[in-house]
Image (cartoon, rainbow, N blue to C red; front, top):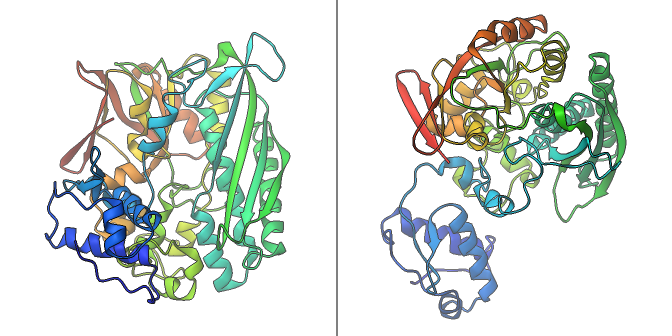
Amino acid sequence: MKLALDPHGTTPVFQQVVEQIHFKINAGELTPGTRLPSLRALAKAHDLAVNTVAKAMRLLEFRGLIKAANRSGYQVAEKDDSLGRYQARGVSSDKTEVHQVVDKLDQGLFKRAFCKITEDFLTGNPDNCNIIHSDGSGTKSILAYLAYKESGDPDVFQGISQDSIVMNLDDLLCVGVNGRILISNTVNRNALNCPGEVIANLITGSEKFLACLRQQGVNIYSGGGETADVGDLTGTLVVDSCAVAVMKKKDIISGDGIKAGLAIVGFSSTGKATYEDQENSGIGSNGLTSARHDLLAPYYADKYPETFDANMAPDLRYCGPYHLEDPLPGSTLSVGEALLSPTRTYAPLIYALLEQHPGLIQGLVHCSGGGQTKCLKFADKVHFIKDDLFSTPPIFKAIQEASGTAWKEMYKVFNMGHRMEVYCKPKDTKVVIAAAKKFGIDAKVVGRTARTSGPTKLSLRHGQKTFTYTL
């Protein structure tokens, strides 16, 4: 296989290898099943280091274009449309490759619990257990960076603090956390691009949000944090958090309660809850890599090259029609406001349900990584049927229309209208919906669970079509 590489060009050589093999596959010059030359052979033929070729092959493999072959390097993979644009950008919606490793490790006290739960190593109380959880705002922080650079207003980073905290807090809700939570923040930044005023607003935003939660009865406190200047690792910044809680084992929602015969009540991710001070677009903090690139115009790639991975295919970088200040079709928000809408927490609502209606909740699923397919990981031989979802919010319609992403993939990447699901007996749905409305959150029965003789699966209706997903 001959490649036309230019070692003196502006594009790194390994990226030239990726793009030329990618083109050959797209053009049909390399067909599925074709064996590629070995790493050493390809390196020798083009006077390259073996590591350079290996790096290119790993990227092609992640894109789903090639696959490892026994003792013979790589071969061209069969086309898999399910991989989609999200994975092509170097992001996995369901983190399959991660679960292949961690699922073999100790699963904690409750195998199907939404978070790993351990013995109470902190106090040694045999009746208690510990939950520790880490997550962050993801690439949403890059959107804040773009808005900051365009406007000069660092206040935009206050919402990013909320995003990072909520992605931990709402996962903890799914195991029934009902007591004190201690949270610590970590900010990795490029100090040249993100000066002290950025850090000041992240800290201020975090403290304000935690205070608001405590006023709503959610006992969450700051345990400090760390700011690391890592300009070699990131051109902008990354905002992460780690949350710790101690619970009674008897209060845990283990995940074993999600069985056939339950109703699924979805809590809307849009609108304005009683404890929010602005309208929420529903975007949350998942799928922002695709949302950012599919909606925003090439202007941002040209002006802010530090905000994207140079390994990404050029046609996937900031390829949308909008600028941050443009109005979002069908919404009162601008595109920038919708993308930066702080992630809603459902903690006040879930705390109220746990306190006022003990035993009602059979299961909780935070529709984060994996979107509407997240539920598949938390039941065995259950058929999830979601056939009456919320209408698609404007932000997700705009992403789909701008990108042409298949609707089936959209439901795997984004929450698409509701980001928290309660699993309960059908007779209890009115209680759950009424509780949500007290907090200004729209809620409805979006589906149900049924038995299946085969593996766990999800049937999801979109318009007149039904999509089927399995693990």
